[in-house]
Image (cartoon, rainbow, N blue to C red; front, top):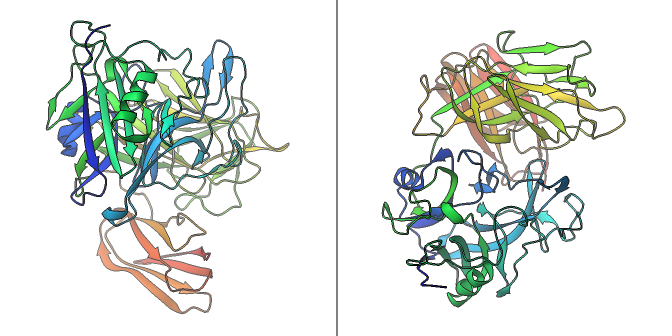
Length: 511
């Protein structure tokens, strides 16, 4: 139909001084992200909302899920549960052993699972929601970094375009229309290919269909490849310069990108981070309705136990009123104590100017750690975050749980005044994560005053096996890593002593 102009970067994954990394922000233009990350090459990532701040595609960075692939999509009145494509890197410590692989993935609780075949959706068939065992062959995906999109283009050297299975129909992503495209692939000799083709301008570049994109990547040597967001989002930045012609005429604000960055590139840190606990007082947290109790389970955040209520009316709510200084876009995470009698669809609603946006979370898993509820929430002073009891999925007697929330902003273009985390109101030894662990776990603790701190690990006979911290430390939340290498399996005790404060928690090392 006309000329086709495309650009690609070929990167050897084994290069010691550089690495391939996804980048997640709460929304900025790709050229600004490239500058902040010192990217040599950067392309857009996966799919996102119209305001450019909420991502619908996976961003796994340094083994932590920053945002998951979308869990459910609606076509007409039908809800589908797609396992969408992702491309991941295993850094493996030594650059010479880095590898890259594709997968169809789905997040269950706080665990990312990969599947050797996609969930078999079609326009006329709704496949069951994925689980840790279904589709068959499911396993936790333990790559270090990953970017999501869809659909899959190449798998094991042949075209494998799972357009229907990933429920791309009705999404605006067309299978056989020539369009601007962005894709990422890997070759048999451990190279990564970042690929962008321009389109929608027959005098300059007509674009490619998805099958044509798959074939082009195969000719470039790729064995596996996935499509990322295309259309007006397709962008490639090289050395700070946009080298393609985005079809909108300008670049879009977007939350996820993927880039080749220096190995020692500075991490993109939040410009704002604060924590809000159920024990922070009525100005921060309030409950409606009677029947609230404390959990008997360990693993709660801070010094106050998590709060429970049986499922039921939406009028029963635990509401956080975050103390923020100005309106901004935030990432919201929640902390809860998981158990088998928790609701699997607990509603968490973010209210901005009286309008609510609800995300439902599975509180049977993922507890005693920060679980990302979502990004791209606009909040202003006076707004709130409510966890309500109108959940239905779970056991006969089911509970919702409230414990703590965390707000972050990563938007460098909109710094938040008072950008330091609020000072903790109390001393606390936080639950280790993971726990049980093998061989390392991270232990968090918070200090409300400058203190001389000792953080030590003992066996059950009271013998000290590790001193993790012995220093004077500032106010705030701190973290230390306990490496159990060389120790026998079993239960250990970690003790925090800060001034007159002392608290102990149990750790379980499993070999």
